[in-house]
Amino acid sequence: MILNVVKVFFPATLAFFIGIALTPMLTHYLYKYKLWKKKSGKAGSLGGGGTPIFNKLHKDRDTGTPRMGGVVIWASAFLTIVLIWIVSKVFPTDITQKMDMLSRGQTWLPLFTLISASLVGLADDFLVVWGRGGYIAGGIPLRIRIAIVLLLGLLGGSWFFFKLGVTGFHLPFAGTVLLGPLFIPFFMLVMLALFSGGVIDGIDGLSGGIMAVIFGAYAGIAFFQHQIDLAAFCAVVAGGTLAFLWFNIPPARFYMSETGILGLTTSLTVVAFLANGVAVLPIIALPLFAASLSDIIQISSKKLRNGKKVFLVAPLHHHFEALGWPPYKVTMRFWIISVICAIIGMVIFFIG
Image (cartoon, rainbow, N blue to C red):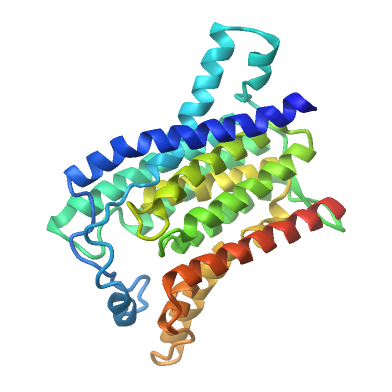
């Protein structure tokens, strides 16, 4: 039991300090090559029209602050996992082999998803800062990113269905819901829904704090189901995210951007299914779904009600900014909500 606790908390701490150590080198590179937006603000998405209020709120942001800070998260997580694996092979003792978290059934797929999706996000970030001679709506087109997410979902869902024999999910208080072959499109839909929640990455410190809480919650769920490797993986990601957050709190040294949020949301999908906790995902990750839903509501309202809006600005966190809340107040209150949601989701999971 004690070794299991150490296996979860030690790698998380190691990932945090590796992330802290990586940051000066990453920061030097990001600022040396000026890897930030050349114009602040954004254009409307999905036919939702312009975003003048958002652009006014963010007129002094974006430019001068680099993107790609998410590299800290996935690089520290990857290095931690690989370093522990190497030590277990070079110095094979009971303790070092126990600490190794790489396992086919629990961590191969989430690690693959984290790294592959993060690299796609990294490519998008490079196109954003270097593509098309300065831009507002650059990078990899949204439809292509959606297609990549769906492809990852197809691969992940197929792995669960064909390799692990998973055909359904646990619904608290109701038992197992069997989907059969429909499990694969369901998996893809969940991954796409979480990917859409990536719009939460919009205020200094917001996405980092929320994602650390979510992965921490699933670390707890996995641990108490004796999925120790998966719990350790979640803890490592949370540790790397906290290292990123150390430098992302206002004023941010860099932004997470697509290389961070894409890897986190897609790997979170895999984690939720592996932990059999996908049914409580809408609760534990409520801030992500609320942000995505507010965007959908806003766009639908503007299209169907002759330009009338429900929110001053979407996603939801920018609505509170437009109401006059300081960004740090929005961030901290969303952190609090995220913790409460994580606790409620974990309680429902365990008693259900």
